Length: 452
Image 1 (cartoon, one colour):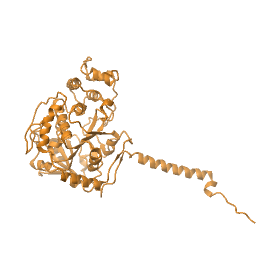
Image 2 (cartoon, helix red, strand yellow):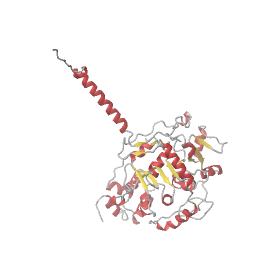
Image 3 (spheres, one colour):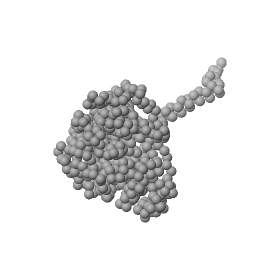
Image 4 (cartoon, helix red, strand yellow):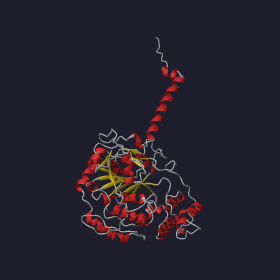
């Protein structure tokens, strides 16, 4: 009786073929893993019926930058998961309909809260709040009326949900369109770009706006020209008016996103608000600084790289904060993970705490200089009521927004740079002749040489 004879499959008869198949599947797995890990910082459902067509076609003469600066991180340990766009849109719409504006009650509350701030801040000027119901002063330096046209002002009052705000002064940046928008976003979110006369002239030169029109639109952005009656001669200081007093310019909005003009949003703003503010139960959300943790590190970098030329004024500002109790960051400040933010992207839930924080920050900027990262920890640590702050990872920031170079860079390549901190450079750049008596305790604690 003949017995059945089994032979090895052809695949296993050739060692070379077997190794080739194994190599192929291993390569495919590694390629798939690499692709997923490069974007694992943020996951989101595709926006409902997302907008695919370009929002605006730029003329070739405008020189629209095509390539963003490279990011420093490819992944992160704290991914942000976005909810479904359609659900988020309906939830925010429902909240906006059922919510009322803060009105005079909060204005009076902010007045009463001024005394609870633990610092010794002064402002050079005080202005009345432009409000139809209450013209009382509150602790927030501001002008009576932002110098914009009546049609623009009325349009700003009609923004009653989410508003995305940016500003370009001195023609310092390009106007960039947000990406990844859902089909309902442009109908429910206000995108407002403030510009000055110099920037307007540049846009008119490239035939992107007309002097004969009273309203200007470039893609998603409503262009609002601020007249030459600006309060400050420094363009950076004028820029912090819409950056920190956005609740004044848009008193009926419930949420806002500030985007520096060098940045481009690449995630729908509704998804950002829902994930980083609503789900996190935060008043304000912004990224941690990519390198600095202590206020003194940011102050030293400001002096070293001449981000603000008056070093004497910088020293006076930091010594004032040290004198009134500012401490370097430590685990005692948790859940705040850092004293230095990256303020190029700020998300807010408009309310008592966030409005007070914004006003107090503005007061410090007006009193000293427009470098808003310097007073951040001082205001945050001493203000009452306490701020619910979501300081998310730098990698998240780099996944939701792209950074570009400024127009004016003096031939230098823009982008982030690492500044090494040590005792000698800190003292030599910020303090002259070792005159750091007010901040000596701060420095010793920051360097780990004192635990008192």
